Amino acid sequence: MRLDIKNLNKRYANGVHAMNDITFSIEKGMFGLLGPNGAGKSTLMRTLATLQDADSGSVTLGDIDVLKEKDKVRSILGYLPQEFGVYPRTSASDLLHHLAILKGFDKAKERSEMVDYLLQKVNLYEHRKKAVSGYSGGMRQRFGIAQCLIGSPKLVIVDEPTAGLDPGERNRFYNILSEIGEQTIVILSTHIVQDVRELCVNMAIIDQGKLLYSGTTDDALAMISGKVFAKRVEKTELGHYQGQYKVISNKLVSGKPQIHVFSEQHPDNGFVAAEETLEDVFFSKLNSLI
Image 1: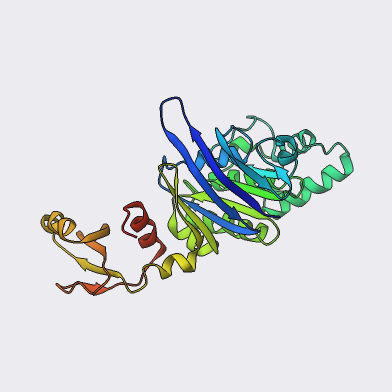
Image 2: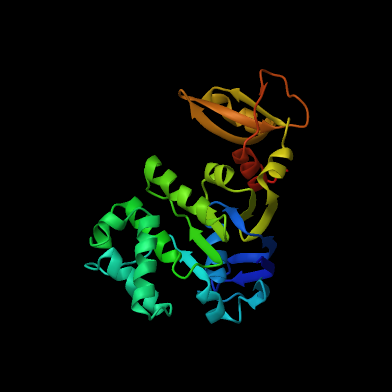
């Protein structure tokens, strides 16, 4: 099953063009959707999740028209938004039972087996009788994945899922997602570039509602291979270098800015060749350097 997005547009009443003629396709597996805050990622995710309408364009999931056949999409969709609410005093087990009933699982034995399986899968079975509102951030996100997987969905969408998670919980969360991605389409919307590089073979970059790149992570890196150079400079020199070179990014290293620049040829002047990263691709695209 493939997800095809064609010429998708959405403009809000305040004039913001959140989706501007977006076109790309997603095959089975983990797919990374990168973009800064306000890029239009959440608008696209909410549209794919049938939570809001597009102004124009089309989206198909296999032979399903996503924009018109919303009930069909919801029956095979798993969705984890940035924030999700829970009933304050409801246990994880009871809440999953409730959500499964809403999704059409009315046979008690089948539903109980599925709920137990999902809680074990996300390593929450021992905590199944605790209220979800009392879970840690990582446990809540793992519960979010469990509710995503009710009914073995064909499309899973997770929107900025690791905000506030410690490194251990983040790794556990992504191990679960990677396993899911072996069987279904998983769209990971994030602004954390490293996560996409580690998890996804295919990706897209969106900014200001426009698609800047769609393809493999390896092809993205190949675009800047041998064209990224680094140098540590004084803070007072930063403006000069930004005026003279195509500066991709700068960050403080031991109190001094380290800049990455894009150049077709070695710029000399103390620069050294740097190993290209997906972060370099990301910022190069955002700054229209490539």
